[in-house]
Amino acid sequence: MKQSIIISKCLNAELDFHIKSFNPDKVFIIVDNITEKFCLPRISDIPSLKNAGIISICSTDNSKNINSLTHVWRSLSEQKATRYSLIINLGGGMVTDLGGFAASTFKRGLKFINIPTTLLAMVDASVGGKTGINFNGLKNEIGVFNNSDIVIIDTNFLKTLDSENICSGYAEMIKHSLISNEDIWSKLLTFDILAPNLNDLSYLLEDSIKIKEEIVKNDPYETGMRKALNFGHTIGHAFESLSMIKQSPILHGYAVAYGMICELYLCTIKVGFPIEKMRQTVNYIKHIYGIYDFSCDDYEVLYELMKHDKKNTANTINFTLLENIGKVKINFTASKEDIFESFDFIREGL
Ligand SMILES: NC(=O)c1ccc[n+]([C@@H]2O[C@H](COP(=O)([O-])OP(=O)(O)OC[C@H]3O[C@@H](n4cnc5c(N)ncnc54)[C@H](O)[C@@H]3O)[C@@H](O)[C@H]2O)c1
Ligand SMILES: O=C(O)C(=O)C[C@@H](O)[C@H](O)[C@H](O)COP(=O)(O)O
Ligand SMILES: [Zn+2]
Image (cartoon, rainbow, N blue to C red; front, side, top):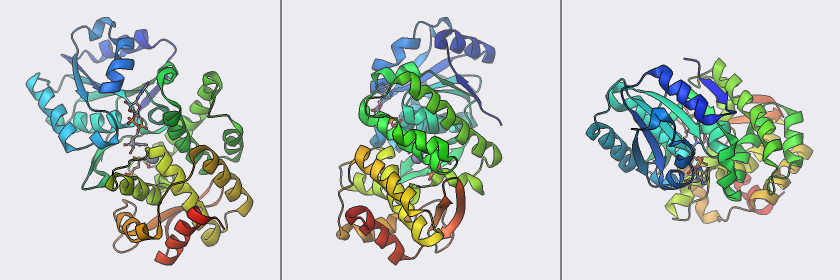
């Protein structure tokens, strides 16, 4: 089912219109404790949300788990949600992933609307139908593909988002440019994301969403080219999980940024990605995201975590690699030695 993505000019009127068009018997809004405070007040006066049930979960990725999911399912059940109810996910990727999964599974599926409130959720998580939760120490281990009926994007929400989370979302935008378009990549590497002009960022954000939309349209269930969107994630997700194990979590976009450094290294040694473009991207990432602190003692654990990547087949760890910007190769394997070399590369440089 095609997902309708609306870049909103007037959030309240548009949201009210769409809710009424679904004619739901009840509306539920899923928030986390931060979006409840900063984002919910922006929509709570809408007439069609007058009697909406609010379901709040704890913020951060630590909460994208079975306990929060159970809380959402139980709240829906106790407040007598039916198949004709509508769920609105108001938050970042944690809320849209978990809320989308709750909506897709409760009574085998309710309609839902995503209103992303972080940059990362606007350009990536709220679009394309990947929903789910972390499980067993692994990212997005349980989930389903199911598009929200609508995504409504209002960049005004970014006004209260902190710089780290802006940078986190920007990492996925850099990923989108690397897998598709050198002009956009050049623009992103010269944009000042540490002191962003929100108006200029909105244009870059629209380009980024179009890149994802186009890929998902052609391969919604990730049987082929959608794997491009997973660039940087084979190693990035392992960094993210390792940080959770060490109880010093890093943001998803930061993990992807570090993952892209390692995977760009693999791109140069395995499929000839141009060294100068690799250096430019790596320098930019190091400047914005700093360095990821890990040691040789972590290599085996990271390797074990990578064995759970969803692109893998039987005994091989599969990567999405780039021959150049926009020239994507999927289902590439790399030896343990190559992978460990890429860890040395991010820690020590060439
Ligand atoms: N489904 C997908 O295709 C997809 C794509 C990329 C990432 N993801 C997932 O998305 C998650 C990360 O999403 P995220 O980066 O949005 O993190 P997040 O949802 O945890 O939000 C980051 C922080 O910002 C706060 N916040 C949200 N909106 C705010 C606002 N407007 N003002 C102030 N604070 C606000 C949140 O409460 C949270 O503390 C990860 O779980 C990742 O795996 C999914
Ligand atoms: O939409 C996609 O496809 C992606 O891979 C987007 C990623 O940025 C996102 O982090 C996604 O959740 C990763 O999915 P997974 O299948 O590797 O868990
Ligand atoms: Zn991601």
